Length: 297
Image (cartoon, rainbow, N blue to C red; front, side, top):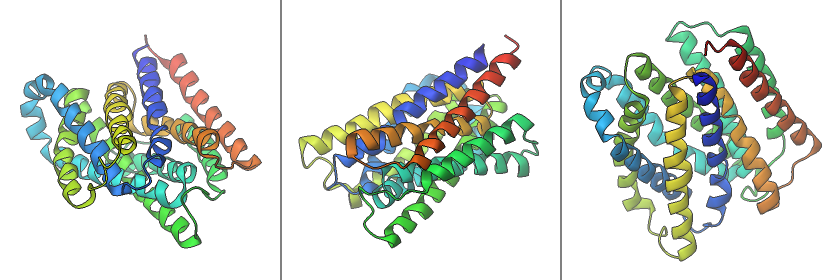
């Protein structure tokens, strides 16, 4: 039952994250780098502050895992900068799809190469189904932000970089949890350290953040709801779910982002794209069903 709760917590975080691209589109004059730095920087700072008691209790364990903390923090710094830039260049739907589609491959790769863990048949089957859906969903080109093939390609590359960094900090958080660090401490330490770097970059990119009420509302929403509340839920879920499976379930995020991009922004999804979303939902249902049947609780 605890593992099932973890799955639902991760899906909730994915839903909240799926709203970020549409929200960011309402602040077109704000740099994507500034949106990413402010949202993850402020969200990370809040995560650290709400985790202070846990951080104090786990201080010695965190010091022992200091390499993992630094590596995870660097991945957290890269992720929002690459992610929001990818959506700005390739479109909300495609930017989300590529970033989240590539993350499971990287997470599984880290577990196989570093943790020496063999993925189960169910995980590989779910990954295959989800990946097929992601490929179908990514075949269409974003129409809101991308106006040239070069921008589209750059957005795809940045999406892959975001996926790499996402998979990396998910893996490092899980490694710390496996070594006895509480999930709050793991997330709070990585995001707190990353927030120092991200907030510092705002001196160079953040001049338009508070230029209007709309832009102010957008960045505050992204920082407080998807980033802060979303990552609290994600950290809780990681305490019960393997990093590769957790990252696989985040395939729900591009489905949410795509639906919102269609309804709110007018982006177009072809029949192949809709078929891809069906594949992704099958992937999620397979993961949840198997985990519920295998749960010892």
